[in-house]
Image 1 (cartoon, rainbow, N blue to C red):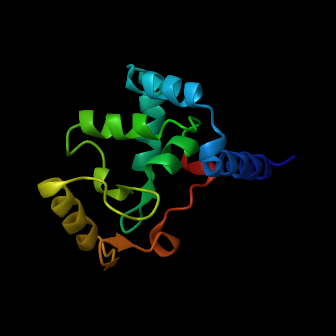
Image 2 (cartoon, helix red, strand yellow):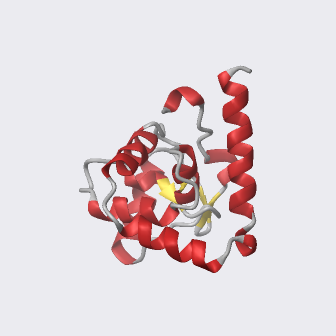
Length: 142
């Protein structure tokens, strides 16, 4: 079976898992949250690789980055990594909530919106159209 077909099946499976939010047991959610706060250099490096693969003018969500890196349900660990990294290390502005809304508050939200506008992203109110601007990860991105 070709690698791309396997990756497609894996991504579809992860998308189904992510869409079943209420079906995920509370104990698993708690464990994932705790694990996401622990330092894990291998996981963080996978997140960095995925975030760096997102081109200018494109965005992704915390959950999609985690899924593409091979750590589904670790979306909070992606957010935690972005908080720890310096502003110049990663293109942090390209990571949004799954609905296309900026999750940051105050000045950081304004900075993120400004940086995305400079990359050519157009907002519709407080959100952008993820169908237009979301980066589709491919097997060669990571």
